[in-house]
Amino acid sequence: MGGWAIAVHGGAGVDPNLPTHRQEEAKKLLTRCLNIGISALRSNLPAIDVVELVVKELETDPPFNSGCGSALTAKGTVEMEASIMDGPKRRCGAVFGVTTVKNPISLARFVMEKSPHSYLAFSGAEEFARQQGVETVENDYFITGMLGMLKLAKEVNSILFDYRVPIESCSARAAATDSPLQMNGLPISIYAPETVGCVAVDSQGRCAAATSTGGLMNKMTCRIGCTPTIGAGTYACDLCGVSCTGEGEAIIRGTLAREVAAVMEYKGLNLQQAVDFVINERLDQGFAGLIAVSKNGEVACRFNTKGTFRGRWLGACATGDQCMLGGIWNQALWWESRRA
Image 1: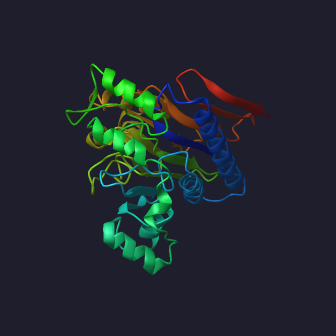
Image 2 (image 1 turned 135 degrees about the vertical axis):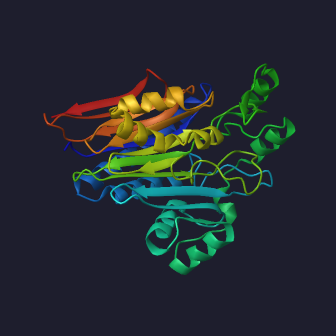
């Protein structure tokens, strides 16, 4: 059995025109969340506790699209989604359409542990949150100055923008788009959802995964994406834990997260081979990325978008070496530290 490991992501499809200060905000937040996870794993917390802890922190800070800072629906409200899965017994919980729950990932865990169900949604999920004493806030808490971007999205009839990029830049590129991306055959302009996720394996080889998002900017109300869909956006079993991000409809069609485990089990691939196979062969021209850990302490990351905010920490291995890596673009690392 290998050492513990953890990986965290802040969404696939990061726009190359993202302002430097926005990139720095993301780097600092991912670094802080990695350090929280590392401390928890060193304290021998189970992987399921670790992924909830890390995603909860990501939901509380607005740089990414989850919890505070979530994308807006076409009506200017926030509807959030989250899921969590514990590998050893494949227990899972998911929520979608929640509007007042401060940390949807914690409500998803309550669904897993305190209800006879795997999924709860909309008013039923909100009622369950109140029954369990989960912290709730007004919907305005989640809206962090994005009404202007929603207005622009409506004007150009786009379902999604990277709402962290300056409005002027988005407007110019939307007007100049010759071959827009498509989602289920319909055009969209700029794709950068910034979903968050965490995967971890503890010192006992137990894998877990958690994912959370506000969904698409200017999405239809009651739209459900890949994030709360077990086997698509999130999956964990005795072999691995996986969290996906990107074009939700393509991820759902490819059951991306479950496919990683399936090709490991049935094709005998190692973790990185499985991740590469799934991104190359199961997306049907969609755009997505994922992070994964194996029970042996391996970590893998792969995406076919322009960039994915991601961080990676490899725990103790046979040699005792440890390293921390992070990057936004395919070849660019923002930090790397190694120590024995």
